[in-house]
Length: 248
Image (cartoon, rainbow, N blue to C red; front, top):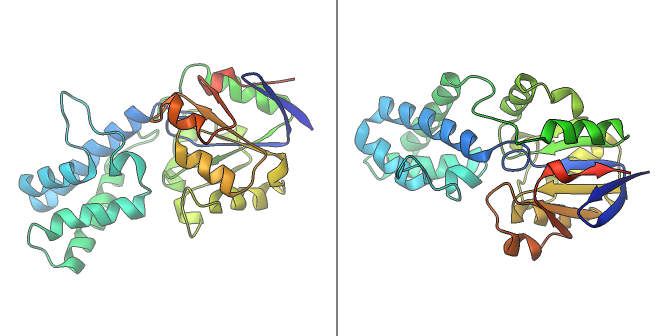
């Protein structure tokens, strides 16, 4: 068993599961890249009015070059955001079936416009921290609401994919965060137990997912969408970033 150092805690464990956006990479860059590509596809399919309505609906309406990172685009898994996106087409006169079809096409087309690493930029000192943990004998995994294939392509481009023993995306489970499904799937793939596992994430839903899966410890980081006061309610320990993690 390896001792993971997180803040003032030393946690004996075998596996560390990370969220991706806001935990390992800068979530703002990822969300902006998605917003620009999806808006372009929606506008091409249905015109500027629908694109403007879509942007308001999913929280991608740019204000001073920024967007609502806590809105549907920034927080929901793709399958749930698509329902919000379809509403924009529906309220502009499409039948519901047609609206869902157009939303799927717009998002598929947007994926085609984007190239790895899809706006992903590793947060400062994260690669070094991941290598410390891996070299120290820990298994590492990712549980992300970002699409499985795009996550793999991103991490490969960022040259850290080989550090992870398992990766689970929204397509791999029945229920997304905060349900325990992603963690349980990773435990199955890595042959580890929840009592030997630490969950690391930037959101309350990451912490709740870990709790629901009954992992040993949930570690919150302040590099994402949640403030310390919010994470304190659900996390066992809160640290500034993944860069502060080490092994003993």
